[in-house]
Length: 329
Ligand code: CUA
Image (cartoon, rainbow, N blue to C red; front, side, top):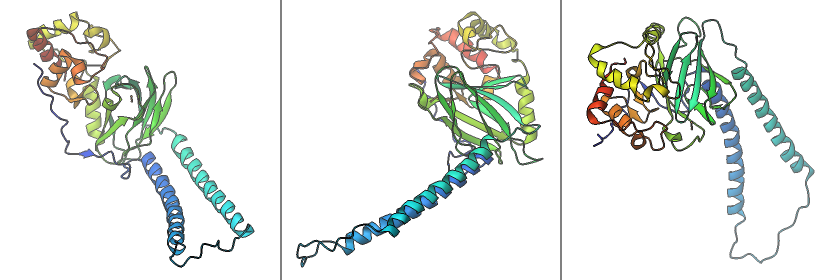
C-alpha cells in the first residue's frame, strides 16, 4: 500500500511568488517598468472608459427623441493629429524605457566574486551545477545574499537536456527560456535571505506543473557552510551497506550519481546529498522516508508520466534501499 504523501510544508521564511514584491535587482527593474506601463495604460483606460460612459449616458435614447440624426461632423485636423501624435509619443517613450531596462539587465557583467551556476532543465526537474565548486544538486538553488559586503550576484547559464522550459522565480527576476542547444544567461542578486519559490514557466509536457524550483538565499557564512558540506563525497554508513548494495546493483546507477561510488549516471538527479533537499521529484513531494519509498515503488503514482521507471523491488529490499538513500545527507 502506498502511504499518503505529506503536503508541502510551509516554510517559516517562505517568500511568496508575488511579482509585486521584488527582492532582487532584475525583478526590481521588471517591477518598475511594469508599474510604469500599468500607470500609462491605466490612465488611458480611465480616459477612454470615462468618455465612453459619459457618451453612453449623456446621449442615451430619450422618450422625446424625434428620431432624426444629430448634426454630422466630417473630419477634424486637430483631433486626428492628437490621436496620431499622442499614441506615437507614448509608444516611443515605452519603447525607450523598455530598451534601457533590457540593456541594464542583459548587459550586466558578472563582478569578481559572483557565483556561477549552470541550470539544466529536464523533463521534469532542474539539474543545478556549480562548475567552479564541483557541486551538483537538483531543484533547489542555493545562493549567497547580495546585500552585505557589496553586491554578490549569481549568474546563471541556462541549458536544456530535452525540450523548452522556462526558469522563473518571480521575486528574483523575469522569466528566461531554457532552450535545447542554446545557452541563455540571466542573473539574480537577492537582498534578503530566505526561501523563494519558482516554477517552470513554459509548457514542457505532462508534469510541467510539477517542475517546481526553490531558491535558498543564505547569509554569506551559511552559504559557505552549505558549499563545504555539498563538496564532500557521500557519507559511508556501514549500517546501510545492504541498501547500498541494492542501489549499486540495480538500474539506479545508470541514471543517478552518488559521488564516491560506482553510480555516475547523469539522466536523473545527483543523489550524493539527497537528504539535504527539502523536496523530492522537483517539488512533487516533501522529502521523507515515506515519500521516498512511495516514489521508488511507483514514481508514476506520485508524478504521472515521470520518466523514472518503477523498480519493482520487494518490500524488504525497498526498505533497505530507502535506508541507504536516507543516509545520503
Ligand atoms: Cu519544464 Cu515546463
